[in-house]
Image (cartoon, rainbow, N blue to C red; front, side):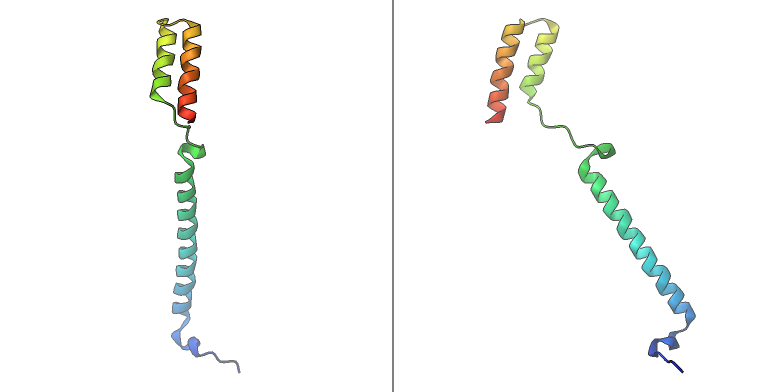
Length: 85
C-alpha cells in the first residue's frame, strides 16, 4: 500500500492548503493588474506629454485676438525650440 508522511495531517488541512494557495494566486494577479493600470494612467491611456505653461498662455492670447497670427507662430516656434533643448 502507498503511504506518504504528510497524509497524517488529514483531509481538512489539504482542503485549507488548496484554498489558501488559490487565494494567493488570485491576490497576486489582481495586484499585478492594478499596478499595470496605475502606471499606464487613467482608463489605461498613456498620460499626456508635458506642455509648457508659456505655450498655454500664448494660445490663450492668440485665441482672444490679442496677438496676430504671425506673432503667434513666431513665439510658438521660439517656445517649442526652447522646450526641446
